[in-house]
Amino acid sequence: MRSAFPASFAAPVDVVRWFGAVQAQDFGPAKWSLGERVPGSTDAEVQRSFDAGDFLRTHVLRPTWHFVAPGDIRWLLRLTAPRVHATNAFVYRQVGLDVGAFAKAHDLLAEALAGGAYRTRRELAGVVAAAGLPSTGFGLGYLLMHAELDGLICSGPTRGKEQTYALLEERVPPAPERDRDEALAALVTRYFTSHGPATTRDLMWWSSLTRADITRGVELAGDGLCHEVVDGVSYWSGWHEPAPLGSPTVHLLQGYDEYLVAFTESKQAAPPLPPGTSVPNGAVLLDGLAAGRWRRTSTKDTLRIEALLYRAFTPAESEALDAAASRQAAFLGLRPRVVTRLLDGVG
Image 1 (spheres, rainbow, N blue to C red):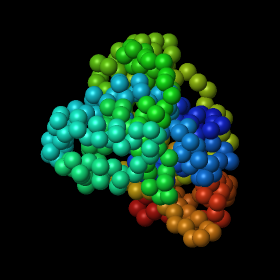
Image 2 (cartoon, rainbow, N blue to C red):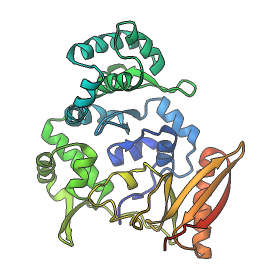
Image 3 (tube, rainbow, N blue to C red):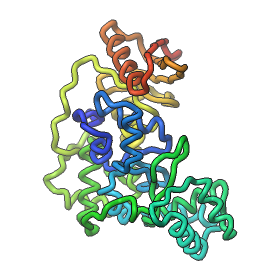
Image 4 (cartoon, rainbow, N blue to C red):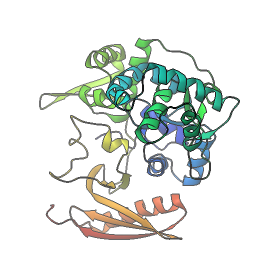
């Protein structure tokens, strides 16, 4: 069983540190990934923690946003940003961004954000547009991503419904540096401990690192990892005892939760999904295994969870589903309403 819920965490940043990084391109659902693992937390509390800089949102590991702990952001960027830049190189050229454009943009962004200024994407678009740089669409997105990957900018507090940017050096206190071997060992150990059992190909996809890098990281991790071979495939995991869960236990994971998206070679190993199915919103996990999909809608005071199940639940399993919906509703400050139906052609 994978380590989706190894223990109860005390704060959102504890979840982020545990995973190493948490995929977060969809900000609202990503907050739920943290809240689901911090018992009794609310969306407002997670938001306040983010706004305070307890954890950050930036591009790292792959060309998408992740939540990252402040103490990890610099060494993660040094380790993985070169690979992400290489992945982005074709798009950089397509949107007309070159070394000169990036240098000019970095100077403008540094000036605009200096002194603890927090500016939105729209405000920064105006800054770079005045210099003739891309200020809309993919051009602006990749220009800002480049600055994030270079460690110039990161997330600031949310302003209304808009995200802001800040200078990383002003937002994040200094932290001890790690040399490349230390960083490789840390990342490999963190991933396999929080995501395992998983394979080196899984980690290659998750981190953008090369097979040689990961092999080196496994060697450096040494006895910190557990290794087993199943059906000819090597799996790695950390030495820890998963938190005991009562059965049945249901979790409602959003579609980009680390438990669902952090794998490639072994993505069907756990949770196993019936052939041809997908998780357009999220997965209903029953005792750690996929038991269906779910989607939600809300009104002023009610959260409606529609659970699309692969098979009918027993009364005890239905109670566990109701409990999971109640947790998410409480997180959002709403009352739960659960509707279930069976998925056609599955089971």
